Length: 318
Image (cartoon, rainbow, N blue to C red; front, side, top):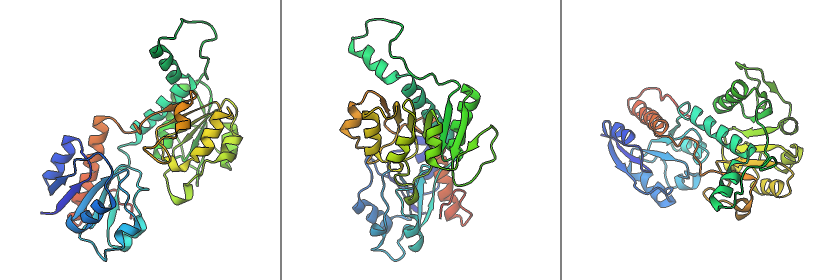
């Protein structure tokens, strides 16, 4: 029976599904695996179920020709923490869990959008502080979401799910920036450049996968192009955004507000961001619902099963 390491505590259904097929060891820490733990895992286990923060680099793999570990089943759709090319060169297959995360992540985008536009975080802090003095006509005036222009960076599964909610639910006009034109079920205008999209949109949402090519894709020039009332939302990965440039744009009120579920050096959040009232900060809640995590786990286990059965892995990324 193949030996599998699960790198973090998982939903009971995920562990049970894995134990039905493999000899399973569950690492009980909620922190990312250390380089030493990863090296040991490559030597001792036949496969590992890894997740966000488990940094599998070329340096970790350089000590191996062909490690015992032949499969990394990533628990999550994003896999920028895994050097996929290095894995390929060492005979290690990699898979992920797309699809299962789409709607939940889009829902968090809507949460951030509504909170940032309507100043909900700021308002809740006011109530909790005991300083709310009652309703008045100019209290905490925010940005009305209905009928606004939505700009989506990356019109893949998640970007489309966000745009669908905004168009059909809030009557928003949709624009997007991506490598290729998309055949969509709703009207959407593809913009020629990211700066053009930023200048056009009232609300700008990042929904593109992280890669070396998208590192700091959203920089000071993008924020400079945005309108003064513009709201910026990131549900993708933190390093797609130049976080220092975002802080400056928020501090100077160059843009109106932001909503973030991810951070450039996660879990570290800059002190400057924590001090700002015009930003909503969530602790990477994108897929944080039990049934969603169970679906992700089922997908990861199925990827492992198929690999060791010699079948085509449903969600292979290399």
